[in-house]
Length: 476
Image (cartoon, rainbow, N blue to C red; front, side, top):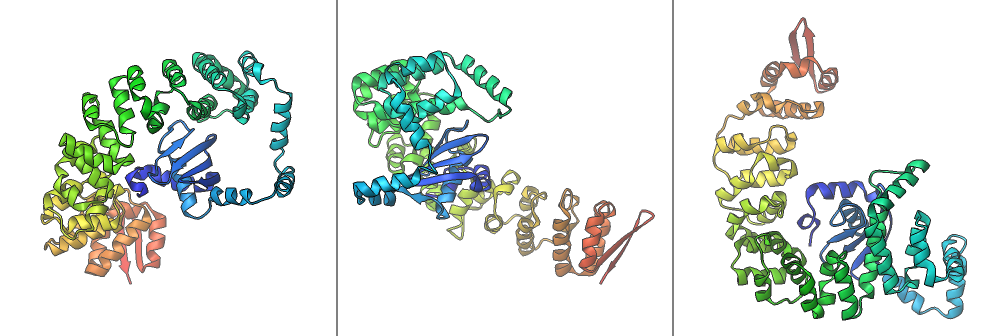
């Protein structure tokens, strides 16, 4: 599984920028648990098998914080809690006490937590919290979740949802007064996320599940943990809408395919097509059962199966509307084969995809297209020149006079001076100094105004002077 098959290019780029914002990251089993600094300190969980991420940030799912945590782990910077837990099991009681004692100066919160628990009556704690709601009390609850029973946790969650507006107003006033408030903060949302996570762990009976379902605040969490509640699926079905129940079934390991079909609605396409992200095997079975080519395409995409993508490529036009597939990843998969049908290459070689394509992507696509005009009309002249070079090379193979390409006005428009120098050097190597001089005169406006460009061109042996509106060009 690769990041590109779960996250779009922009999210991955932003996650890379957030790598140094990872405050902590530990691996426990097949999951990463990280704290990543954004507008707030967000708690992020990443499934190492599927790469799906959950986060306490406003986006909640598959965000830049999850990408940052995963990349942090891949660089070997996470801590393996499995090894540490095994080490603790082998310590004697005296060694454990000594270890904790050595931690206390740097971890005073351990004593704070112990002292708080000792003096707190948890029988009245929830009522006191509701009557005197504050940020500090939120922190106390989060630190002492294991001291609260199922009913108390549910009461807290119910209170926060029923009083959401007044609580947020109160939090906002506190933050604004103290000068700490940021738009990206979501203290209440983070708190609700924590309570719901704990409640999911606590649901151990049919009766408790019914209470949560009636409550109505946790349908997404029930769905996200469908396998845990699969034995109660008839109860879940009673309280969920058709669409909600379908999503629940799709999260189960081995659902009844006929039941999935029975609960499909006109809005069911997206959850069905997202299934292979979680389970390729179930996606394959359902694709055959429903005879659904769109789903077959998604399965091939998730499996990096070039032949499957080619066979069902007619689905691409529909799927790209929903951003369920990334063109650059499709090209990367297809490039495993040396040749693809030109009709497919044409659908992928589009200006709107250029930004996400690598030079290798561009080269592969143009090498599978044999019409010069199509390539010229669909090349993005605003893109970096390293990509356009691949286009020029192919056009020359198709017997196109590539000097015409260089003369196009849009080639140098809005390009940084470093890109312009790269264009001129390439043209100089290909066609000589006289052609470069001709180019400079054709794109005259680019060279009159930029002193930085002229200064750096001089280092390349190209001297340009503007004498009363006329360019004097000398090339050595």
